[in-house]
Image (cartoon, rainbow over all chains, first blue to last red; front, side):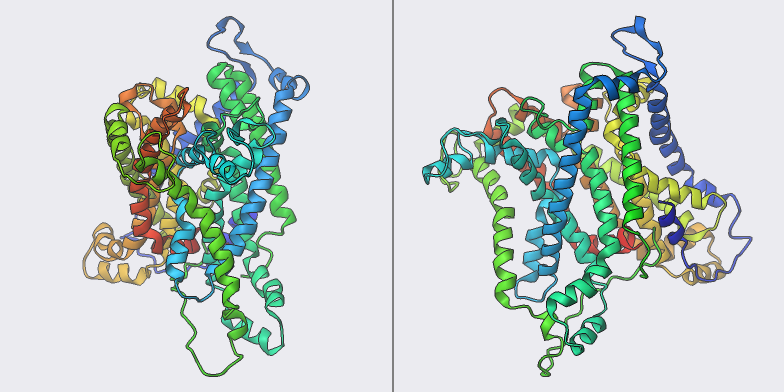
Length: 311
Length: 294
């Protein structure tokens, strides 16, 4: 993060300062609304999460409320198998989703970056699920997966599989089924970002490579991929954080089931706070999630040497 | 975050020169290498869309794979009986309010970031970036308490504020990028002609920002329109709920009415598809200008 900010210092064009036109308080006035909103509705909630993580806090059991020290954390790490299960599932979900989305998104971006007849229409159609919400994605895939009139019925008509199969309620198939549903909406996101970055690869590089006799695959490895590196690092990171935090799809598609099989850590936290009203413990889990995210992000940026190349 | 704002030109096609070999190798992959994978992917993309249309348009109980005979019974049912008419109004209200608030607040902040050097600017930029790591879903409980204290639970304004707050950082970063793209000298010229800073901004800069503002505004609208969790948590009264919550209610019923669900889904998709078709061109340039450039 710090690196990104350091890079971000813009090479400001030389500016003439006009004291009369730029009262010193003006920039502060301009950012005040945004700053106040963010302080009140992001910073304050974050701090209160940290505070509650050290408390026993359950509105339905007020007699137990009070300072708890690190009890909540100790409980999570030593005495709560569900915490480990959901954390493991979150990791699995994020890695598989982001990996596949990157793979397909990159391939798709390279394809629609070519010149061919029907490119504009092709792009529009390929990108179209991007704007579809998590809930609507769930609705669509519930229709596709339902056991009576979903795709399994028509597959069974053709002799593939059995009638009445429901991929979402079988622990063996629910993971791939949910992954595919989320890929449907997630791949275009990567394709759009990578396509945007592909626009800025200099043509001269390819020409020079051709003069040197490089093949298309070599050009991809030695020109395209290094150029895309920073965009890929940043978009995989943002996407991973997003996939970790986002609960819309799994909440509505599987509800975390069957048998808790697809419960991510945020879903577990939501259940702990909303259904069980155990706000203190939920806050502790949230804090743990924060720390894990932050730690993984820093490690990822370091390992990938983000911003190290020249751009 | 933003160092340069390329005007992000549409890719210029190479002129079809007669010199064979040059440019060919990269630019012109064999046709089948484009059309075969693209077609396969399009099948994967389009079947779900077809499926929901099919369920929405064919009569209940039909198993035909073409929506014929066509019926609009599901739409009527979901709009009237399942209160999607009300949800639609609420969603429009939330979406438009979020759009207006986000754009105005981000415009002010983005201008400050683009045009001034001030003491806390670096810290502020860093804070904007950090918010990208803050999960809105995990702040539900404290946010709920804040809105309860403000007596805003069950009022659409709570959802508008929450959506705006989480839209702001990215919008502000994008807008400050667009503003930096407008030469400062234009504004200064207007001051010389006797405009004050605000008038100069309104007359000179604002018209040039239109594409950027359309992109950011539509973005905010679509997000608010699509987002589910805040509405689910902060609005308990059925008459106050939004379309995604309505869809979830349809889905979590004991026996799901698939026709109604499909029709509701299409009602949810229509505004987004319209907005998306409208802004697609700006979206790619907006992203390449603001979000990705290291």
